[in-house]
Amino acid sequence: MIWLDIFGVSEAGLNSLSADQITRLTSARHIIAPDRHIAAVKQLRQDQPQAGDATVEIITWPSPFSRIYDMLARWRGEPTVILATGDPLWYGAGSSIVTRIPLNEMRIEPAVSGFQLAASRMGWPMAHVHAMTLHGRPVEMIRAAIMPSAHLLILADSADTPQQAAEQLIEMGAGAAKMTALAYIGGQQEARYDGTAYDWAKIPPQVADFHVLAVACPDYLEGFYPSAPGLADGAYESDGKLTKSDIRAITLARLKPVSGQLLWDLGCGSGSIGIEWMRAAAHARAIGVELRDDRLAVAKSNAIKLGVPKWAGVIGENMPLAAELEQPDAVFIGGGLSRDLAELVMRRLTSGGRLVVNAVTLESEAILLGLHHHHGGRLVRIAVSHAEPVGPYHGWRSAMPVTQWVWEKGTEK
Image 1: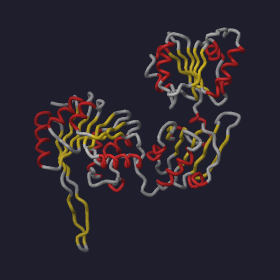
Image 2: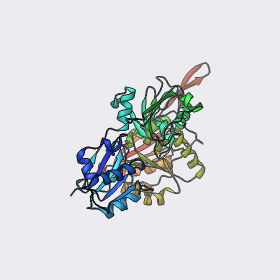
Image 3: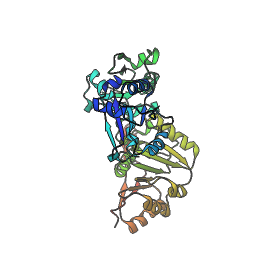
Image 4: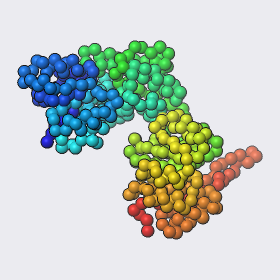
């Protein structure tokens, strides 16, 4: 039985609802709506004789938002309407509600999204746009999306978002990026503010809290950070505990970043493996484990700099944490290797999970030989050489070879 309706509402408010949606709204026992629509909802109920239910409950969005789950549990089976903005499943409330309420008990009916309206105002095909939200999220997330010629549509957190985004763009060498704030988009008060990142950082105009920010990055950006693994070593602050660029690219390819999946980076050092895992796949998550708090602080700084501020770091030893952390989809062991640790990780991995271990010492290599003998997988030795000056000429200088063991759960012998 359907008891929950989630309607997307445009800037036109209740006027954007269909007659059928109005009927369901006026007959609901419980209504949750944004502050700006509460008065209109109450007036509509008064104007509709068929409503006639003095026990109706009309409330604004709860704070914290998580309170809504207990409310919906109490109201289950009673006609309930939630009014959301635009498309409830595009960075909207519906995205989390669908994980708590069976789909056959609800209807979700979107309005035109603010992203779609913004794209139409800018003349940008939606298929070529990177849409993201900074609402309730760190502004540094924009850094991972700053690429040559990129078109970004950003759901703002507040009136301060354009200036904060401009500062990030300037730090990334994209101060010439064109920025447009589109406020009250689709409504009678729709307003547009244009400028470059340099302009917005200096004297930002007054913009409404609720707006979509459009950013057109320059066609050329010197030294930008691509989403593909293998960033230059100079992108990281490090005390030397860093998986080098070429080895990192190979390692990430074998870890296989997947959207939404969780990586453990055990012995994370400067955090490079987890950071590039998150950059390579949307909504991927990473937890770095490190014994030293100074290294963990550096890793967190690297994560912010490279646009993945949600990278998580944990202080502690690998073995006890590997027994307690959320079950991973992929694990990289870059430090603190032991056979017991590897076999514990193998048990904890999800089905289809990937384990990659890199070793540079003979002792660690011996452990990998034993693991390969007992559990199969792939054993690879990677040698990288770089051309360096030798007097007036150049020659090859070899880095320490890396022995790599790759194992996937479900493919073991």
